[in-house]
Image (cartoon, rainbow, N blue to C red):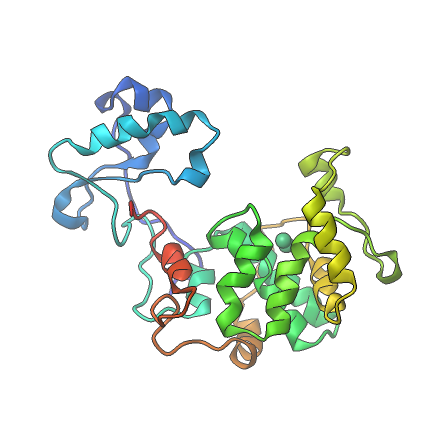
Length: 274
Ligand SMILES: [Fe+2]
Ligand SMILES: [Fe+2]
């Protein structure tokens, strides 16, 4: 198994072969030339998902993308995207880390888990750190704590799941009694005047009263806000923790019929049209 997400050779359709509307929207990157191993050697189009385009000029281009798909020998992307490494039939958590998550997210999660372990924290906390930004890594950034908690809910302890969900709110609020200050990185990301919305404030207040507060707070303390993709942490460092704290389904993640199986399948085939 490759140790990183390696895009296989693929090529864009030459921009002059596309309508001007698609070229101007930068959509030439979403349309792939037929590859040697592509189904029927057809041109395959990736329709950018609504969450990636709403509020951007790309949202006006869906009609042009649909029109492009009516050309002969052109279909929408469904199933394996040849530009991505193929996932095994019964994927396990490690496969998502190595074959789907990009180097920055992967390193961020592994580094956070390593710091938690070096700090001598409980395995539940190490597991929560390893998974805390899994939604950003493979699915969606907005509301990532909530998405991430849902994705892993059937497979981890309820406390781990709760901690992942609540880190979404807790990371905005200092707790000096345990040495957590507002992250410098957030001043850069959001500006010095950013104020979290009221629902996040309420979530934070409620979480502070909860018996598992410190589990979630420890995610924010061990969160690494400086992303260094050159730091290499091997997933196998956590094989033991994962083995004891993540209930891997025999059918593979995405195929166990759980209420969240579709979320794992979306990470396996992120470019499916429908
Ligand atoms: Fe996070
Ligand atoms: Fe994080």
